[in-house]
Amino acid sequence: MTAADAYLESVGSSMRAADLTGSRPEELYRRVSEDQPVVVWVTISMADRGETEGWYTENGGYVDWSSNDHGAVLIGYSGTTVTIADPISGQIEYDRQQFEEVFADRGNRCVVIE
Image (cartoon, rainbow, N blue to C red):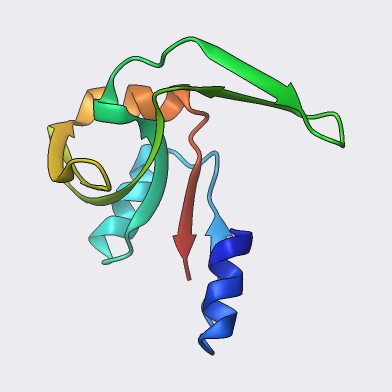
């Protein structure tokens, strides 16, 4: 969010990144239906999350990560699939239930630009 906000400010945009972490998938789908893409934290190819490692931040919070953690952009959905703009695979469809499970496993982490 810090990088997004810095970029938006540098180009004179009044838009800012908004952390929607904790949002239910239905909120993401609502935003996508209003033409607002959502950056989501998932895994590469929506695979089960690999073994995790982590570290403690200066304020004592724990951050975990897995080698297949991945950021992508949710751009569409149907009753059974989601469409993801993926920096590795391009535009690709995944099973909606698998997406929701992976999204939940990653802590429902997501960001939008508003």
